[in-house]
Amino acid sequence: MEAFLHQVLSGVASGIIYASLALALVMIYQSTSHVNFAQGEMAMFSTYVAWALIGAGWSYWAAFPVTLLFSFALGFLIERIVLRPLSHAPVISIVLIFIGLFVIFNSVAGWLFGYEMQTFPSPFPDRWGSQYASAHELGLAVVTVAILAAVFAFFRFTSLGLAMRGAAQNPDSSRLVGVPVDRLIALGWGLAGVIGAVGGMMAAPIVFLDPNMMAGILLYGFAAALLGGISNPAGAVPGGIIVGILENLAGAYIVGTELKLTLALVMIVAILLLKPAGLFGRALTTRV
Amino acid sequence: MTMTSETEALGLRKGVFAGQHTWQVISVLIVVAIAAVLPFVLSNYRTLQATLVLIYAITLLGLNILTGYNGQISLGHGAFYGVGAYIAVILINHAGLPYWSTIPIVALICLVGGFLFGLPALRLEGLYLALATFALAVALPQILKHPALTKWTGGFQGITINPVPVPGKLPLNPDQWLYLFCLAVTLIMFAIAWNLLRGRTGRAIVAIREHTTAAVGMGINAAFYKSMTFGVSAMFAGVGGALGALTAQFVSPDSFGFFLSITLLVGIVVGGIATISGALFGAVFIQFVPNIADQISKAAPWALYGVILIGFMYLMPQGIVGLLRTIPDHYRNVFAVLRHR
Image 1 (tube, rainbow over the protein chains, first blue to last red):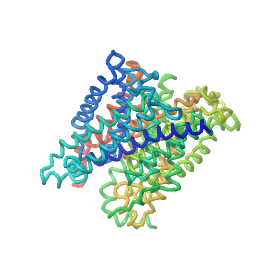
Image 2 (image 1 turned 45 degrees about the horizontal axis):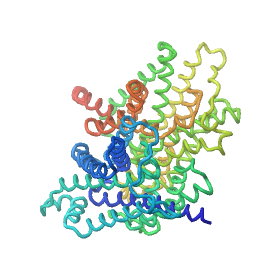
Image 3 (image 1 turned 180 degrees about the vertical axis):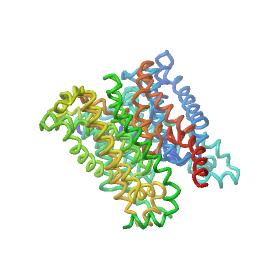
Image 4 (image 1 turned 30 degrees about the vertical axis):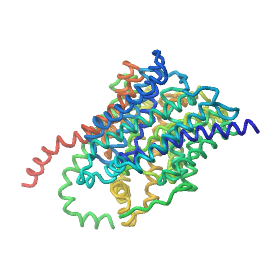
């Protein structure tokens, strides 16, 4: 029973990671009107930067802000250099660009840092842990929920957040009322980079650091978004937690760890077949 | 009946394009003639490489029908290629079937499998479909390695098969025979694709890409056509995979991972999205360029692919075929004027 409870709780912990990725995707969509396929890989790359700084003798809390600054600059520059010139290209081109970025970050990380799995330190002292959840799992939950609340409040209650949503949803009208659309979209990319970096640093102590660490998180995050209902950002949180628990229980009692990614595929297909609108979403209609 | 009246109604089109059509037929015949002579002038190693180009061309054509013509992105075609390869090998080793008979069986299985996967996946568009197919690509190696399937798949080690035998007393070496066999299959597959895309079905496929809602309004069953396109596309990839297995005489789980799917995507972008001949150019590219990049670093082909994907979107969004088309347009206009005088 105790082992079972432990599995459920660590499922909740990974579920929160998935939820944060799912929510980040939806939130970033609000500020940039793109769903960045390379988001996870950029987060992985930022985590490697933090790892390299810590490896060079920096303390965690010195490496942390520097990594966030780096991630902001990275997101900002990618928008400026790579995406800006193609802002009017068809969707398929944009998706291909994201796949290109995905591949570049993955290979450059492997090139610079190697393909071996690395451990990544947790910033939370062990004494915070209990018999059911480790200190890191608790800290992770607190940090993720805090970030999500901050992002939500930013978009909901600040004028900058409102301007960002406007810039993404209707760039032309926003420009007419004096919103600096181009700058805000670049800012959105920078912020997305920062959120991704925090998520990466929170996930790395659990999943270990390697260039392919994000594949599983991305897929489960996607399954979480589908289960919660892709049209409903708030659904991503329960969706993520359910997916995390299912993954952990199935991994512990049914299929083992070698089919981790296959399980994500099965979940995605099952959700699409049985409940395509998700648990909390509504069926999509298209206006002609 | 309908065809004739349609052509008559479009009489203008017939007149204008008659000359162009003849030129197309002639150039296709020339390419086929050159392709048929190749194994007799190239070394065995080069013949093998040419065989791989044909195999890639079939696979790229399948992906291009889906992505180029129907507008659905797949990051999972490496998986269908892998499934085709494994089924062919298992049929040969366990069921004792002759190598040539595996091709139609693989085609049928992948057609049905792709159709069934396309059915739920077609609810997704653009990036979400990319994610769902990405799941397929990363899951396949895990499934193939799973202990429960080791009896058939050989687990981590994979399986080897005997080389394809040369039939009868033909004066050919095995490499030449395999090349000619693949060439025949390639011609059949290209004919299928051309037939599929030129008529009513092709127009429906493109209409869905251009404006799904409007296409549905015109009475096109979008769900059926999208799943069917997915199935056909998977069939091409599966046939490519089966031929690939016959050529390599070996299959192993990790050769059919995400990288293969990315390679295929790069191939259609380089060759030219929504073109039939682009598959050949793309196939030549992905056969030869990564080998060169591989000599620099293990990670280099990946990084190069990423840069190529982005670079082509900037500079040549229509790929090599798009570039070639802009050159003769000028001369074609001159000829057209001369002919009509």
